[in-house]
Image (cartoon, rainbow, N blue to C red; front, side, top):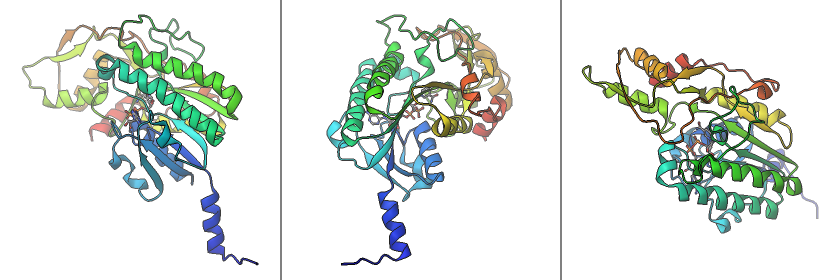
Amino acid sequence: MVYLWSGNNMAKKKKNLKKNILVTGGSGFIGSAITKYLVKKGKKVIVFDNNSRGRARRLKDVQGKIKFIKGDIRDGRKLLQINNVETVIHLAYVNGTKFFYKKPFEILDIAVNGLLNILNFCKKKKVKNFFLASSSEVYQNAFKIPTDEKEMLKIPNIHNPRYSYGGGKIISELYGIHFAKKYFKKFIIFRPHNVYGKDMGNEHVIPEFINRLRKLKKKNKFLIYGTGKEVRAFTHINDFISGFDKIFTKGKNNEIYNIGTTEKITIAKLANLTASILGKKIKFKKTKLLKGSPSVRCPNIDKIKKLGYKQKIRLKDGITKLIN
Ligand SMILES: NC(=O)c1ccc[n+]([C@@H]2O[C@H](COP(=O)([O-])OP(=O)(O)OC[C@H]3O[C@@H](n4cnc5c(N)ncnc54)[C@H](O)[C@@H]3O)[C@@H](O)[C@H]2O)c1
């Protein structure tokens, strides 16, 4: 028997044969931005997220263009129902500093069991490429600032719950690297550094400052943790995506890339900058730094720059954008 395919049917068949990219944690802040980037590139995307912090509204622009599966990454059986995947971008994780202290076991459970499940899925379904989201938290108090990818990774105090987050990422990197040698064609780790932007959730420093500063009465002082001299370098989500694009399209197998900026700022200056954009003048009330919070964090981004990455959004413009 001979089948005659119209052009339309052929196109449909081709589309169905096209392999998927699976984004775990894809309704989260960074995951949804990556999902939109992939859809824009014409990729077929499946998002897997339990929506514990993920939000459907973040994906409304690509509704109907992606497949969303609600599930917990610790549910291996649910994962195994997914088929036709060529690439996994693994982001599912508990983010937000206050959770590091509040639910360290859950963080490690998701880090470890989630990773084992997704890798088992990849092995069974013959997935070729894997992109692993790690974090700047693996460096803790780095010996070298700006910090490059060769920096020693640390868990400074095994009893401090904060390090559940960074420790979980270190385990993920270590296990992933050695698993990859046997099972993946391409395995890349990226370490985001303090990414901020619209709809990121209020547990992070910039939205938290904006919210508190908006409500701050003239007579009251503004509370900050630490001396105010602690240093961070923030990355706007649009810059993060342009960095991710470089890694996704040009990144080399078995490599690790920082994604961030070198635009350093102290926490006190960040508060003053945010206040001035909001038209306020502030005085500080200081309290103890959260136990284990690094005093300076700033990435060396030479490696990703070699792939063509460049910061485009300066912090002041990014915060103004966010406020507006
Ligand atoms: N935002 C940053 O500045 C930053 C910095 C370093 C690393 N990272 C890493 O990047 C990734 C994305 O971070 P984000 O800022 O978008 O955080 P996020 O919390 O917005 O996204 C994480 C997503 O994972 C989902 N998730 C959590 N537990 C899950 C589970 N058990 N099963 C399925 N899904 C689950 C959440 O619902 C959420 O949508 C994370 O791996 C995070 O550790 C982020």
